[in-house]
Length: 183
Image (cartoon, rainbow, N blue to C red):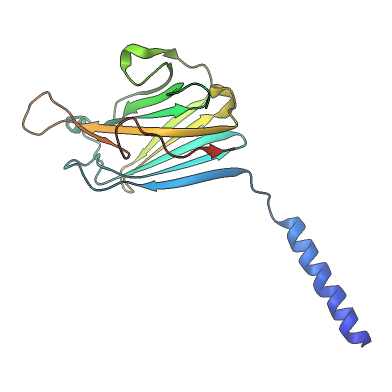
C-alpha cells in the first residue's frame, strides 16, 4: 500500500509540474481553404489568421507565386475590428512580386476611394516564393488592440494577353468575412 501511495504522489507531482510548465494559449486562430478558381499563380488557396497577444498574423497560400513584376500579383487583407460598425476598418495591401511595396491603411469600406490614409505603427509583409506564401504581421497596437478580428481577402494578377482587365480572386464570396477570431 505504501509503495502505491508514494508512486501515486510522484505521478501527481509530475503531472502538476508538466501542467504548470505548459505555455498558456496566447492566441486564437482560424484556417480557411479556398477553391482553385483562378488560372494565375496568385490564386488564393488558404488563409490562416492568428490573433495573438502582441500581433495579428495573416498568412495566405497561393498556387504558384513568382517574383516577376509581369505577374502583377498583389493582394489586400481587409480587417474588421469593430462588430458594431459593418465593414473593414483597415486594409493591408501590397504587391506580391519583387520590388513592390505594401502598406497598412485605415479604410471606411472596400473601395480605394474609401481608404483614409496610412497607419502609424509596426507592420511587415514577407513573400516566400518557395512555399507560395505571403505572411503579414501587424502589431495589435497599430490597429487599436481589438478583442476580435475577422478578415476578407482579395488577390489579383495581370492577364498574359496584355489586356488591362485584372484577374481577381476573393476568399469565398466577394467582400465576405471569415468568422471572428478572438485575441
